[in-house]
Image 1 (cartoon, rainbow, N blue to C red):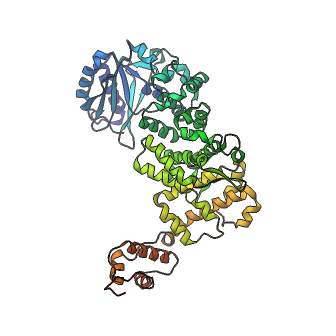
Image 2: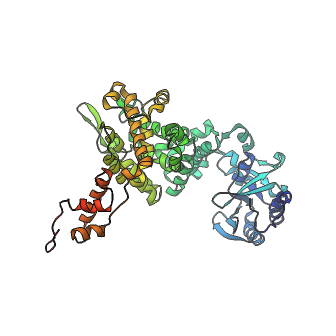
Image 3: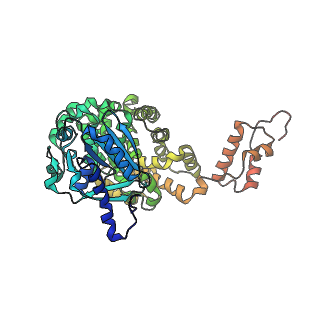
Length: 524
């Protein structure tokens, strides 16, 4: 742990005392202030917070901000003139302190305007809590208030009782009209803290769900990212769906509800979508169960839980638009390609980055590729090469999405039974058909394991290193620059995969056997 830049570097015994200098400094400059919101709630739960929020009378905020910044040698700026919010950030430790004017005539009015009771708590700066500061991996500080005396806690909404009960309760029926994003925040907080949302609050969310289209896309995205980054996203997403909030937020999912019920059961494609989301969450939480041999190598993709789960949520978004009966069977021709286009519109609305949109849409647009490979009794190195070449950075994340998709069709008990066999040699199509739906799923899982094996254990065969350049091709065949050069290099790569070319000399000899157009005045 690194101390604030205004504190001397003292021995460990004196360090805790030194940290409390911040509490004393705050009391010296703003004794009339109150720690409020997340810092109080998180500290009561023994969870670190990323910043300190202090509420003050409006007339005191600016003066206090500059005085505190001078003492801390921190950067200071007015973050929100309308609400009277000033932010301080220390240069070295990146400790963040927000000073905010009361929203309302006094502290009580301010607290009761907040979203949930457990966020409507305040603790006097003058009570000098013990402040613990540690460094996060990203370089910013995290803070915990200790030795909080409950008899000094300001609690007008029953927040202390809600924390004990692990309950999320709105402070008043108007909170979602004041800021509709709070509806999402309720589910995100439930997922992060393991709290339940009260029946009264859920009822109000259901009533106000249509308002969720009002907040800016980036604010919605931030809440979804935090929700999807937890291991409780599925249960909260399902509750959002029951309240009507999910489809109010993503109206593109509503047509799924009545689509293909004959195939998926009540809830249709939407039920399937949530089942896939659930499987994705299970997979990311326990990669070692599904892919024990490659779990460590796949771990970086599991860290991107939010992106993986968003891909799962949108992967069949176009099924209703493409549903058609053919030969007595419901089909969804090209739903993956149309789905990628629809997903792009959704993600742009939520202000995802271009790179994130490209990755998710590639996963959605190609998520039938492993199934297509599974329709053959043998998956060749050439087929695997084309798969990984075409998918690029989306290949491995998409294999995880496909795992979730395939396993969503079987029960937990069935999955538990076949999972140990998923790394076995791929069964034949005939063998899979004998075991009906479970056999089909197992064979698909074996296809995924085989692709991962080729990727991690035989990279030279399916991801060959280029052994000649475009200049080599042009010199050897007396060709000018053209798209044809790329085609020839691709033919060399395929020949490497098939073992026909092993080095530079054999590659140069190989390209001379290819049929290429003769350029006038040139000889080949």
